[in-house]
Image 1: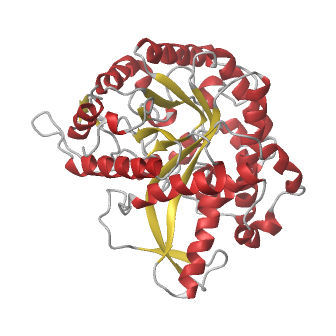
Image 2: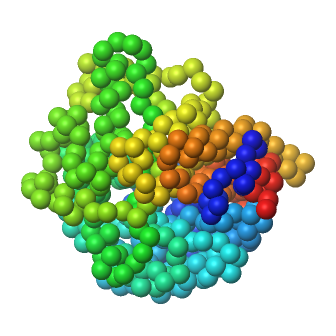
Image 3: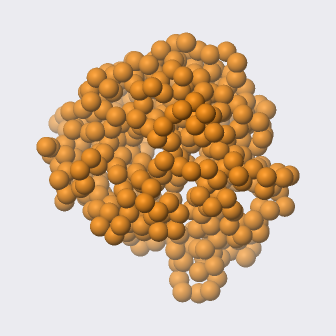
Length: 441
């Protein structure tokens, strides 16, 4: 690794991240059905129709996984709590087994000196609420605020920070316009509603948390560097529209109370009635911002298609197992851009950054120099952003361990810890050991 702990400011938090449905084993502990369970049970949606029933069985194996975090010298663990594990039908009855599990999990972090960074929603909409429209139903803001209150009353006294929602673009646009994730819709009206209601839900969750006296609140947004594939006016405009949809819609609503005109040009007539009246609730102060960053995209216009009339083209840079270009400068771009244009001196955390690679255990070890280089290069990009004035206070690698990669099943491996999905054996990879050496005090 071309960095060490002492290169970064005092108190900088080094951590790793996971998500509940991807690792816990959703069949355990009385959790309710989610739209990922039904989406994956429908032919053609998920590789080999794989689901999160067992995943990495973190539900039973969490103590060993927390030991792995501690052994690496990490300071924090970014985890999520599953709505359907806490409230199996999304409303009403509470699952005490689920609350007890998160109690044990948070206590386990604290016993090991790990700061618990909680995310309230990482994509698992309870099926009973999906039946009522899920993110297309305005009532989702009230439903998720009620869940927020239930889980916060149980563990809020011990978590270091709380994020409302992980990657609203994926929750809404990827899942309702492109249809790649649950619920798998491809409908522009549903998209407009989901794009707005996920922001409204964030505002309602923040309001509930503030009313409860909860501190250190933020949201985790994902950003992809959108660049024109060539110098033509059409490609430049295509990249600007993509940037508005992917990168600007959510941060501008939350920090400025506005939506980009480039997106309203396409979604405006499908937006829920009176949406403008919600912007005051959405535009409330954050205590910190989470930035998830993985890659860049190159765009050209596609006039044969309706709005947004653009498409990505493959770029020339080396790619990860996901087919994503490796572009560390994009992380520096977003960290400095967020500080300059949106949040000022507010603390920023890199809440996800990582790469998938086709890793294999050989002679009891996993050699992944590509990932080691990826982490090192993105840590250096983060350090440059700090030097350029961004108040970045932490970096969480995605992910601690190989896990259920949503519609891509168990094929794509993001972990610094290898998981054998037959035996569930954990094998720390070479990148894990490199990070451990870099973080040594």
